Image (tube, rainbow, N blue to C red):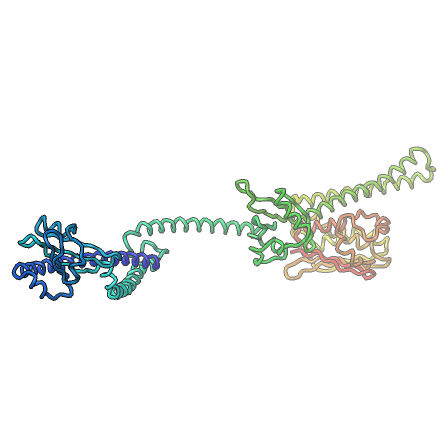
Length: 549
């Protein structure tokens, strides 16, 4: 802006300077020209007076290098000329100044040379004898005068330009200084020209609008970040060039990314072929999905295209952790298959025995054995159904009546009930510890102790032992069941609490178990917010501990 003001000022100064010089030169030229004309006329009057008195004698004695004096007869014939030979001069009757002098007593004319750089002024006066005396002088034209004054004019112009430049720069800086010092953050606090006050008021209004929009945008941004930060699902926003605009913590953990990926291509976040293909498809098809495995967990990525007014603005990627869902689905399928198998086996045995009895293919002395077999399988079937019902109730999480239950007393009751089975397998059952009360569902607590003790007896060795220990430590109630049985291999220890899972299926068939005992223990413990711990080794026995908070 300073340079524009400077150039404008200099242009105006140059125009004013040139116009002023032209006007002054014109005025001066006219002034001096008028003085010169007056002098010529005065000299003509003196010459005319001398000629009237002495005639040719006067003219011959006049010495003048500047003036040319010519005496012309009344017929136009030149009688005298101090600069040229009269015999070689032409008749002057047609000269303008001669004709005017003859007609009006005085005459004048100006004639230019061929180069227009010089002109001659003629002044004529009629004498008493009707002859005409003419005086002429050569004058420089205005162009010659200007050329002669070029040096002083150049000096004046240089001085004027220097002075104008100095003043223009100073003036431009003074004009721009208040503008450069404007506080646009506080427009109303400026002391400036009145002409820009409306502009500052407009800027102030725009600042207020921008501040409001920034606050609103920040609120929306913070709200969006808080929502996405607390999402369990991963969220990634991409622009139309597949650049990452936003990524929430869940997505960072999923893809192993950091905040440095924002503004980068999505390829810097994940280069897997299936994910990149899904990203390409969402921009062309509008929607795509893909399942991936990361860090031992399964995720489903759902990608949707974002459009605005018919143009593609970007895409959003939502990542759902479906590990639990898939696991539950797998468990459901396994549970259904296992239930079908476990129900089918005793039913087939019952149906087979009943058909033999119905068709009279059983000897009378074997009838009692077949009926006992039917009763045994029916009992096993009932136990299985009861266990399934109990697990279903635990899955539903329905509220049950709770009371204070003494674990030591409950353990003694369980041991007493299992004593006949233990005696049959020659296994010693005993309870140790102190009285500890747990507030819970008596029936579920009984299931925990009973199933742990029953498994410890069934999978024990002849002459082995089972010890139930009740203790209290740091405010926690601890129930521990230890046996000297066959033990559980390490690779099976994580799955023994699953439904229908058996380490040794042949031994389980012989023991008559349903495969749901430890699963019931797990769900009953979870119902009481208790923690399960298992320590076991093949041939060294097993210890299962239930820690109640």
